[in-house]
Image (cartoon, rainbow, N blue to C red; front, side, top):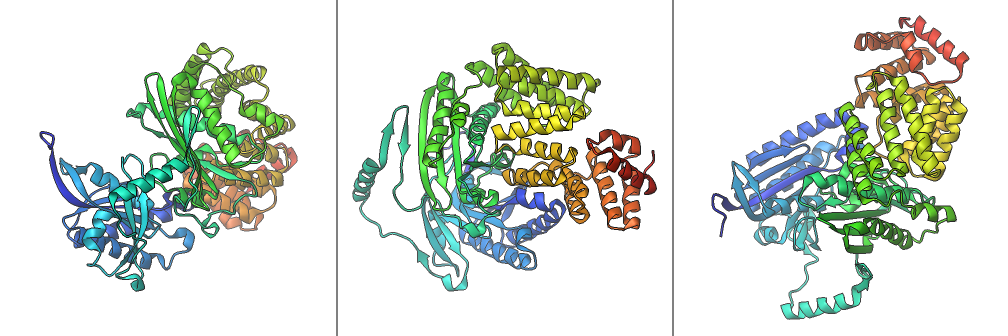
Length: 633
């Protein structure tokens, strides 16, 4: 029976979303926006031309409804063919491609919006489609199979997030020669026979283990394999893995920090294994809350293995599910469900890490064994407070930085020996000083240094402490000490992208720009969706390595992402110096004028104050060039 006050109806739901949007915007934000806007207009026109109704745009996604499922699929086909024609003139890395899912289902109508599983299934179908492709449910196939000039390929029953039962999924084949064909459908057999077969298979495939259930799949691929040719980057010469943000299934969005904290702990622990290549947190968290496919993640980040999972916290109990997938074969290597008391949380995280290392046949050194199994705190309250503080810290603004500091102080109150809490607390003071959020930056730096020393006294093997101390040494002009600290941080955590980028900055500032460039490129590989500041630092490192053309390219990419602010001003100054090195005086002077117009406070004095470079003779020569180009003292 329908709930009182709610209207239900059967509708054909069309859901489209851009494939690889974050990667595209990272490479060319303005160009991607223009192409995407044109494509969204084209999709909207085709939907309306087929009698459909666009319900809303959600960022880079389109949700629409049709009265006829045949018309909905026909519209989807025309959309993909139109977009393919539009993409023909674009380079492969600039093509804006959509995935489309079409479902026929019962929906709730509320204030001209549609809700319910009918909509959710359409979104999940979209996530299973290839870029430029369409996926439909079995209900849709039953209505359209003989009515359109396309073919269909069964992808089997797919288990998707937040949908209780597996969905039989079909890929629409758009090639003319595929018209009328249906590939992969199995002949129907008696339901009792199917059940007996499944029960027999389950009896063989199910392996019970203490504290959870591990499931092994000695069968055909669970997900569509990704080819190495589709990888955005060459695969590393060691096992490579991306850990996706674990889904928060607690029913309370405010508990997201808890599942994020578990994800980050796993990433941090795996990152300390030298025989693994681990993608950084800020790149995997790009996919948070998005219905992405494993093969998409693997291809865009250039890794072979993907870990995904979910967390459900209920009072003093927690349920954690995790599965490790080999994207090249499409097979699950390992999957497990844990139903534990909350006090067992740290043990569960250790078990997940152990299973991954075992599944990938990684040998740990003696030091790595100690670090991987080291617990920073035994206080669940302290860990919980730190995880909530980290959620604020990553928002990178003055208000949230102050809020994060409160949580970190409370974590120390709960566990006065919590070294990691002292380290991240120190970073909040450093951020205040570095970003101009402090009225007394000198005091903020001093506070950061004092807390870093406290953290190191509690734990001499904490990588974040050495990275922070390196940043403090750099501020003090102690370049060799900064490099030594940066190298220690990377040795302790060879997969930490930001620490690797900081080491690059320290090396460059110490007069070793070529080594800085090499480390920056490694940081960018560890975090394909890297922060913009990597590009600014890369540009200046290229400049000091006498590679002005490369410097111009890096600065241009940085300014696409950050066209205003202090760092944008610095990047324009860098462009002027690069143009001067190439003998292009007019261009150099024009960029200096542009920098001054954008930031009237910029001057030789301020630019000199902000520079960490140690080679004073070369730096004075550079300042003389800027005076000649018209930058005021």
